[in-house]
Amino acid sequence: AQKVTQAQTEISVVEKEDVTLDCVYETRDTTYYLFWYKQPPSGELVFLIRRNSFDEQNEISGRYSWNFQKSTSSFNFTITASQVVDSAVYFCALDLANSGGYQKVTFGIGTKLQVIP
Amino acid sequence: NAGVMQNPRHLVRRRGQEARLRCSPMKGHSHVYWYRQLPEEGLKFMVYLQKENIIDESGMPKERFSAEFPKEGPSILRIQQVVRGDSAAYFCASSPPVGGPISNEQFFGPGTRLTVL
Image 1 (tube, helix red, strand yellow):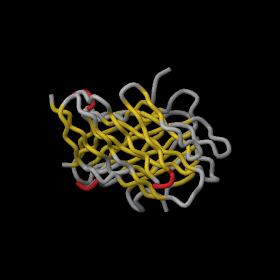
Image 2 (tube, chains in turn brown, purple):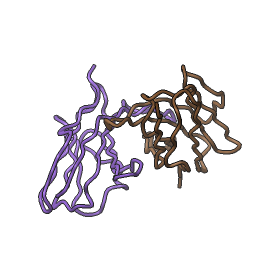
Image 3 (cartoon, rainbow over the protein chains, first blue to last red):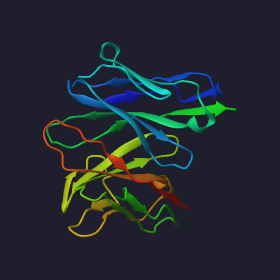
């Protein structure tokens, strides 16, 4: 069985601070995919990133960066110079590339980020 | 290319009534997934469907819930005799056909927020 743990339920930071959202996952599979989604107050889900288990390179996209470490089963997300618009719930998710050829994504409970002006 | 459409966006039902949630996948997508997000929780997989077939319903409650994806028209998630505990956001996602171990991104709809009075 797979599991995603986001230990931080709520984080508050002051605007322009950096913030890291933690994600730890569990799976026995060797091939899997990790995701981050953003859910703003309006409620929709916004896709941020997908990484496969064979690619441990860190990724940077503007103020967003991701640190994938298989050794610790972690896929942490850092927002640099946070802005009020970053306030949202952020979900980490895991998808196994099962033999059925379809996705069955397991989500973490989410981390609510509040950026204070 | 329109994204995944869900309607209604908000649905209010009284206990004992039926709720019908609709999902139109992205053009060209033949796979539909339904997820439920209970208040203050992450999304939980409910069911995966292809056209006219239920492939995996391991996350569906055993009673009162059903899903279909007919040859023509949207996918429907149907909840009979709703109870207060059914109040949640229901998200639909679609993806194109998946081949081999590759996981394609799931494209999420905006969700339907069901409130049971």
